[in-house]
Image (tube, rainbow, N blue to C red; front, side):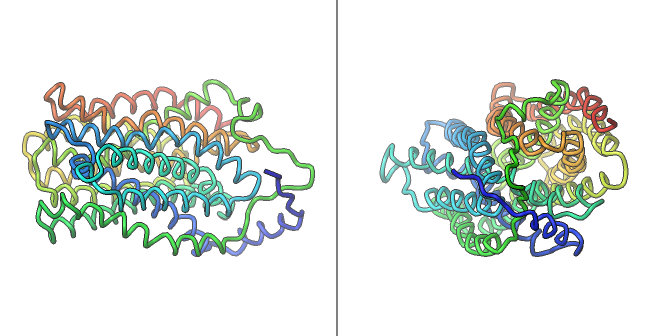
Length: 433
């Protein structure tokens, strides 16, 4: 595709965007698309039990759930591909057309999940269609992260880039709140049989209803890609994006890995509470709402704090707290099977993790060379999310089933938490340069 050539006067246009202060419409356009896409993506996770029984029949409930979660992980296979291809498109055609493309891809995948008949109706075709839909959704989310995050960074005023950039992960928490709230409404309004038969499809149809709003807002976004004639910028996967120091790359992978495990483990709490703790679906969705709210608030607080003090402190302190409290929190919930204990876990763990995660975006972008930020952040993000995010729920469910220990998810989180702390000084050293 032919690269666009933007006139030099667009430099002045971008500066005017920043000088006018916060732009709610610009923020809403970038965030709403991500909310819409992540709402659809996480709805699958919340209704994994129902989807498993509809499309992946098995002799045991655990078998159907594991197959359903495995297909949830399939969506992560195409994330790196979407990140590279749509990232290149965004760097050549502009941020706005790339953001429009991601919504269209996500809508296509969501529609397929919403209308596909069950396995009992059309046989093996049903799971094949669901797998295809997950691949489309994965490509959309993989391509969404780079352009949306870069756009937020480019329109932010000086001294607020940490806060504005943190809206990207915060919007995922907002999507979790919306999906969880809808889950509660459905669980209270429908019988268990109705929820299993057709109720789980409702979120996907509602997700489709949000698409036109996102398309309208993004269609009217001002373009922020600025390129002078003859300028040749490194694209994701080009040699220019590989000039980062090895330690810095390892640290970025570890920081993104921690945030990925934390946020997907937060989403997993709904499945965990139903399948492992035997709690009612309504209780599970209450935990999801609490987790999503904590992600939303924690990310924004961490992003704001990273603009005020050293990102290193904001990143490290919550992670040390998690290391010492994760096992007791999971153990209390597993032993008591109490709603109050589950809600405490659903609030405290995601909040601590995402205060740290929200700050890490500013730290990683600040540590990267100016001409390698998009590739240096977007490519590792897609790879890590594909590897760890796509397997998180499957791994922790398998650990619980194999060990019989409902605290097993805590050990997984602590391991990646310690790795991120060990490599954090490499990131800090780069920030100081």
